[in-house]
Length: 247
Ligand code: PGA
Image (cartoon, rainbow, N blue to C red):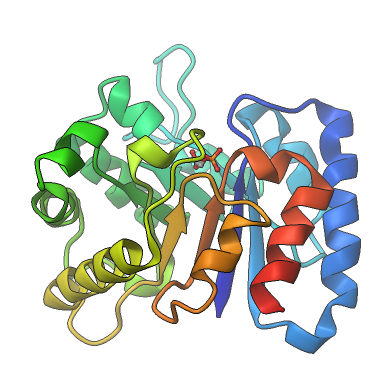
């Protein structure tokens, strides 16, 4: 199974659903290679509306973040995993570098993971090193810590996806070489084996993925899919990624 996840970030209004309708019509006809899944994470404001429309279709809708506790509470502006699940979300991203940058600590992320799983919301857990950490050859140490501090053996790995997103590659066009990425993904899977033993979660790559860069990585068998930011806001660019991956 492969995953193509589109992270819209702060983009989209109700009528942007037309982008997803185009992607869905490609997806429904693409039966030759149906062994992949498309998940789109629009902003909170669109989750209910889009999930309802795609309820009986193959595209899954997810959230970009969630609150770390409570079903309902008095916290102004917060959205709980329970509310997301009830609005039709299947997945939520957790630990995107944008949110880590705004202060989400490992402890908070762990609570978000626990609470999401407890509410039957599957998670896409994002990890990745900064440019400075990469320069100082700390990539593996950083990734290991990010994984160990948050993921636990008792979590059901069927409900978890891990996305490796080097911060220096997000939105910059800078890409890891094929060798670097191969090595890092293998390293992440080794750590995940240590945590989960038998059934480890799929590991995706994210950071400047588009129709061209995906060609660099399509032969790395260990990569189970991609987390796509900028290029997921255009149906053509998103479909190009899938086409070029399978060509
Ligand atoms: P990008 O973003 O594809 O625009 O680099 C990826 C992400 O932030 O998830």
